[in-house]
Amino acid sequence: MNNQGITISTVIPVYNNERFVGRAIESVLKQTVPAHEIVVVDDGSTDGTADVVRSFGEKVTLIQQSNAGVSAARNTGIQAAKGNWIAFLDSDDEWLPEKIQLQLELLGRNPDLMWMTGNYEECLCDENRRAPHALPQRCLQFLCGKDYYDSYLHAIQLYQWGHTSCMLIWRQVFDEVGMFNTDISLAEDMDLWLRIGYHYPKVGFLAKPLSIYHLTVSNSLMTAGHSKSLYAAFIERHFDIAESEGVLDEFVPAAGAIMRRWIRGMLFEGGKEEIRQLLRQFPQAFSPLYRGLIYGLTVFPKMTAALLHLLSTMIRRLRMRRRLTRPPVKPAK
Image 1: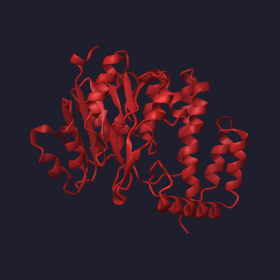
Image 2 (image 1 turned 90 degrees about the vertical axis):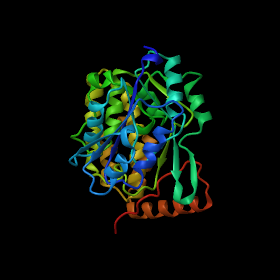
Image 3 (image 1 turned 180 degrees about the horizontal axis):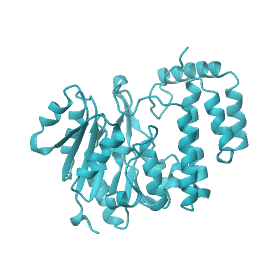
């Protein structure tokens, strides 16, 4: 496999996002090395999204379907794409100009790779703040001079799991592991990356940011709330898959990293039972010290949430946090 034979299709799912989908498309058209095609899947929009996409003419292929969710929209795009490599971009985010060029260069150095991802920038644009998700220098330290992680599950432990809008995947991978799961409504993207990682553990990774993740876009496909019971079901399902694939020992610490990220958000929401369910059901994924600390924080969950929100507000106002995060949602009264 060499770069001369590579054709890249960009898949953009969109739902009622006439305000930002044009920006996403423009970011693909402005690449220093162009994509071979752009496929936009309109998932039943009722606003002017389709008109915005049509304004780009033959540069973009528009597919319209009844509303079926982001996973179904991405799957439609994959099936329609003509390229032998598939890249994804959420309609409210954008690529940085060298995204494709940098990934092709990485692939040229590592022609055996089947997929890759990378660092990205997070933007609180209403506050005029933008920063890398991870410091590039830190990513390079984790990579130890390589262009890839030998194991995607190890990358997750380092919180280097990339971002959907940074993914570039050889299309035959989907034939091996399947596409996005339309039967789940939580972490559909992580579900697929894990399934790919079980079969193809080696994943390319670029320390330089490849895309911009907009944190404050209110109509994002990815901001809907979830029933907390889905979190435990997700992890339980992947414990079973990882065991069947013979990678359970490596998955356990990765699952711990995933759940710690979820638990942090649940603490801000005043969660208790759902957090303790994760701690009880998957004790092997957490250290005794962490379990004890979190149990303590959930004794008075509303007080914990209030204190966390106060602390977060102070840190934001003083701009003490390097990494940007979406403003946490306050728990319902």
